[in-house]
Length: 142
Image (cartoon, rainbow, N blue to C red):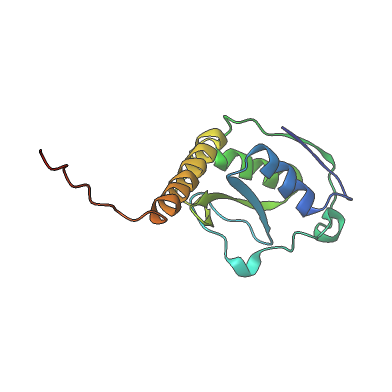
C-alpha cells in the first residue's frame, strides 16, 4: 500500500486508505508522540477532518509505502520521522478499538488477523446466543 501525503491530504483520507487495506486495524493521529509500547491519551487525538497544512508548520510531501510485514512500531516511527506526524495504530477487539500498546513488535498482517479472529469470535458468540439449548432425550425403545 502507498499513501500519498501532502498539504492537501486530510487525516481522514489517510485513515480510510489504511483501513481499506487493513480492515481490522485503524490509524489515529495525535498531537503528541508516544514511546514504544505506550498509549496515547484520547485528549491528544486530532480531529480526522484536519488537513496536513493545518496541522504542521513545516510541510513535507511524499509517498509512504506500508507493507503487511512491517512492524507496528516501524510504521508509527516512519510517520514520525518522515512527516512529523504522531500516529497510533489501533486493532479491532470484538466490538471496540484498542490501542496496540504492548503489540508494537507485531506485524500489520499478524495484528490485522488477530483483530479479524477476535471479531469472528464475537460474531459466533452473538449467533450462538440466539439459540436456546434443547435437551435431547433418547427415543423410547419399543
